[in-house]
Length: 242
Ligand code: F6R
Image (cartoon, rainbow, N blue to C red; front, side):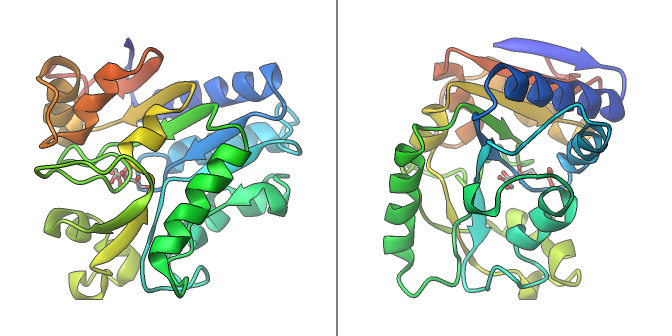
C-alpha cells in the first residue's frame, strides 16, 4: 500500500482531486468508482473547482457509485444519487448515460444487483475506485460480520451505519432505511487502482487495523491488503494509529 499523510483534510482533498484529474488525463475514458459520505465532499468540491477552471474534462468518463439505500427512489432527498447530483454530477460535464447507480427502488432488488455487476463488467471493470471507510471498518456497505459477499448484493445496515447516515434523513435514525444495495468486496477488489480517503481521529483505529491487522470479515477494509495498487490518502489524525 502507498500511504500518503497530509497535515489537513483540505490538503487530502486537494491531493485526491489532483489524483483523479491525472487519472482522467492519462485515460479520458477511465471508469471511476465513487463513494458518498462526509469524507469525499471536500474532494468533490475541489474537483468541481478544477473542472470549472478547465483542468479536467469528464465527457468520456464513466462512473459507478458504490452503494444506495433500498426502498427509496433516486430522487429522494436522502438518496446517495441526490447526494452525488448535489456534490458532483450537476456541476461537471459527465454524460448522463455514463453515470451508473444502483436503484434502491427497483421492483426486484436481487435482479438489480445482477444488473449492476453486469454493467460494471460491460464497462470493462472499474479503473480507479475511490473509497471512504466506515468508523466500523466497512467499505461501501460491506459491513463487519461473519462473512463477506463478493458481488453486488443487498445488505442489512449496522445500527452504527444507520446512525452515521441519519443526517441525510432529517437526523432521525428511524428514517434511515434498514437495507441497502452495495458493490461486494470482490467487485471493489477488481478495480485497477484503489484510492481510499480517511480523515479525522474517528477513523484512526479502523485505518490502523485495516493496514496492520489480520484479514478479517470483522473489518472488511482489511481485505484491501490483498490488492496490489492501494493508495491511502490520510490526514494526520486518521494516520495516528499507523
Ligand atoms: C458511502 C460508502 C461508505 C462511506 C463510509 C464513510 O458510499 O461507501 O462506506 O465511505 O461510511 O462515510 P463518511 O465519509 O461519512 O465517514
